[in-house]
Amino acid sequence: MPDPPPEHPAQPADPTRRKLLLVGGFAAANVVLLRGLPRGGEPGSDQVRLEVTGERIPPGPPAIDGADPPPPPGHTFTLVISGGRVIDPASGFDAVADVGIDSDRIRSISTEPLVGTKVLDATGLVVAPGFIDVLSYEPNPYGVWNKVADGVTTNLGMHGINNTAKGFFEFYGSDSQRPPVHYGGAFDNPHMRDVEAKLPTKAATPAQIQLLERALAEGFADGWIGLDVEPEYTPWVTTEEIAALAGVAAQHGMPVFSHIRYSWPGTAQEGSLAAIDELLAVAERTGAAVHVDHITSMTTHVMEEALARLDEARSRGVDVSACVYPYDFWATTLASARFADGWQERFRISYSDLELPGTGERLTEDSFRRYRAENKLVAAHAIPESDLRLALETPWVMIGSDAILEEGDNNHPRCSGTFSRTLGRYVRDEGVLSLTDALAKMTILPARRLEARVPAMRRKGRLQIGADADVTVFDPATVADRATIEDPAQPSVGIEYVIVAGQVVKDRAGLRKDVRPGRPVTPQST
Image (cartoon, rainbow, N blue to C red; front, side):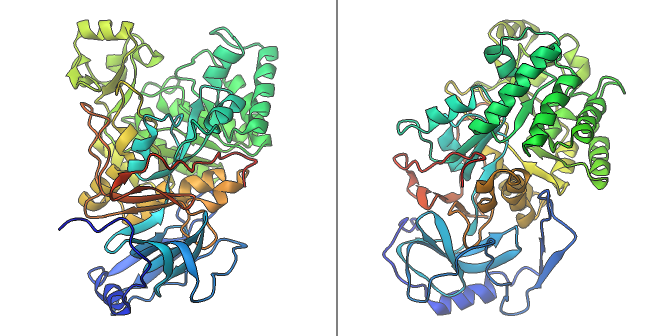
C-alpha cells in the first residue's frame, strides 16, 4: 500500500480506533520501565513502573515549569501529530496520544483527539523529542540534511567550531545560510590557538594562557556554550593551560568537552586511563563540568576500567559525562598526531584495518604514505564490539555523532546514521538498550548537560507542554541507518517526520529544503 499523504485536512481521530490502540497496541509488552532524570541528565533511582493490564493508564501529560495550561476543548491547533506513541524520557510519559502545536511550542498532549489546521498521521509511529546531536560540527548545507534525515533537530558543535562565535553566528544567522536545525557550538582551543592567537606549537607562556582566557570569556559572551580541548591532537598543550581555560568555563557555568590526551591502553603515565585521570583532576581542581568525547575511540581495550573510574568520580560529586557513536570503527585524518610512529602497536591494528571512506579501499603501506600526504580521513577498524556495548549500556553516556557530512564524502558513516543506527540495531535488533533509555541518550541527557547556563536547552530534549516544538517521528519497525564506509552519504530510513520550531522540515514525501527554521543556541537565547 502507498504511504498516506503527509498531511490531511483536520479531522478528529476515531475514538474507537484510539481505544483499540490503547488496549491492543501495547498489550504485547508486559512492563515498561521509565526512569526519572536528576541533575546531570542520567537516569536516576526513581522509576515509574507501568503495568500493562487491559487498557493502558499512563501518567498525566507532562509540562515544563511555568508552561501555560493547554487551550480549552475545541481549540484548533496550527499542527497536530495524531495517534502516535508519545514518549517523553524526561518524565516517563508513554502513551498513544495527540500532540497539539501552536507556532513553535507544544501546547497540548492529549489522549483525546485534537483538531489542527494541519494533521500528521502518526499511527503506528513513535513521537519523540527532537534528537540533539551534542558532538557535531558546523551545520553546512551539504551535510545538515542528512542530520535531518537521521532525526536531528538541534546540531551542536561541542567538539569545537573553527571560527569565532561572532563569525559563526553571523554566518549561519543570515537568511541565505540559515540551517533547518537549531545550531550552537564550543570554543575550539586548537583553532583559537593556531588561527586566532597565532601561538606556536609548543607550551604556552603564562601571558599566552591569559590571552586564551580572555578570548574564551569573549567567546562565551558572543554565544559559545562550552569549551573544546583536544590534547591528543595538540600534545604541546599542558594540563596547566587546560585547567586555566576550564577555570574560565567554570566561572561561566559552561562544560569542558575533551578529546582526551591518549586513546590507547598504554601505560599508567601515557595511556587512556592516565588521560581520564588528567581530565578528572582538572574538574576537581576547577569545579568545571567535564565531558569525555566519543569514549569508545578514546578508551579502547580499557573500557570497563575507564567507565569504573568515571563512575567512581561521579559518586564523589565530579560532574562528568561522556558520549558515544554506535560504530566499531573510528575515523580521523592521516596527518593527525594519532598516526604518529607506532600507531599499529598502540591501536593493535595494521594497514589493512584502515579503510578510505567514499571508496571502501583498504590501505597498504604504499597507499598509507600517499594518502597521508593528502591528509585523507580514514576509518580504523579498531573498536571492540564489547567496548561499544559497555558504553551504550552505561546510563550517563549519551549519543553524539562526532561528524557531519562534507562535500566529497570522505566521511565516517556516523555523519548520516548515528541516531537511526542506535534505534535500529541496538534497540530493535540487538536489544542492548530499551527504546526509552535510547531516546533519553538522544534527548534529555544532552539537554541537561548544557541547560545550566543555556536557557533554551531547558525547553529542548522534552516532549512536554510548553516545550519547544522540536519533534522526531519514526517507525520503530523500519528505522535504520544506510550509510556505509563505501557510501557515507546514504540517508537513514524510517524517520517519517521531523519538526523544528513547529515547522515540518521532513515528511513522508522527503526533505523540505525550502524550510529552514533553525535558531541559534547561545547563553543569551531564550
